[in-house]
Image (cartoon, rainbow, N blue to C red; front, side, top):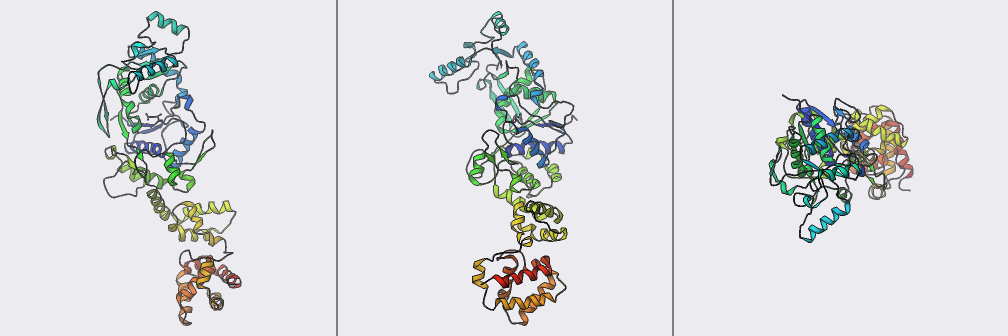
Length: 506
Ligand code: GLU
């Protein structure tokens, strides 16, 4: 069987939307599943839409997600270069071939003439005026000019474009792996520009030429490209090439209501729509990213994988290998999937609590380093083990653990009011003495020492536990008191009790 070859072909016009990441992911999963190849091609022929930094952003995003490619920009491969602006020279011949076999033509219309045409049609009640079978005969092109006139214009360097000659009255069939047969009547297509006199092809020409030359077998891309597919089918036919198989992925929809998920939804509802933070090079505007917000790449990928594809079972949590094994285009739905920011958090919490303590300690250690806090490795590991299932995002690791590293300086007033009684200092003092004489600081032993003390003195649980916790963490939060004491160790525990006795309630 022919090797399966798929590609992700973004245009560097800004940061990659999470919908784009999902397109890349599905291509990647499909390639890996079938032992095929996954390519990254940068489609940068439209120089007017080029945004500096966007290409680097795309590459870094894929890297962060763990979506690695076999050929492409940055790593090369048998069909290099993979950046279309560097392939510029090779497209012209295909545009010329289309002209020679009568499927394309030169058009010399000025922007003003094009405007006039649109106005004329609008005045006649045409809703979407376009350059097509209906209008091309009234325009300045190699169909209306004589061969000599055309040659003269070309020789005098008049600006021109090359347009496809869309056939009249023909049903064009697009076979889509997700949508089945999609029939489009040629009267609905316009004579799209394929090539411009600045020497650059447009997206349509460059895209199909490269998919052909790069031996792409499946084009898996967003639904927004479905309207272009009939044109692409024609171009393959006119160039005498076998078209690839198409699969147009459903849209990612707003969490609330209908319509495509946009950056504005993210701003409005407080979640990122980009994998990484992005600073717009022109306006300086900053958009948040999943990485910087503290998501784990695997959680992000797992969440994205299920937006549009379903495994046909109840399973939600998938390792990358499981995703590769389970993925199939047949199980990608036709209708859009609502994006659910809460589900993204759910996945992150799931993966965070399942991380090995060592990995959590690296994440937490990075936060500590930024804050200039140095701690012993063993201590960091114990804290990490204790708090990892309390954190949803990476910054939560600090919010859930800061009191282990920085002793409280202030004590929650509400807790003080409620639990700190005139007899509290003496009670804590007595407990402190018992702890001083305790050597076994395992959680179980500390637990029985404290409970024994409470019982022997006829005290209430709440009376001691709430004030002890207040002394240790400064408030009413955190895991079990004995567990905290066990991790803090004897010295630190006694110091904190002393400090609270000396300061609280005064
Ligand atoms: N350059 C197009 C984009 O930015 C690629 C579309 C396709 O995959 O054919 O999405």
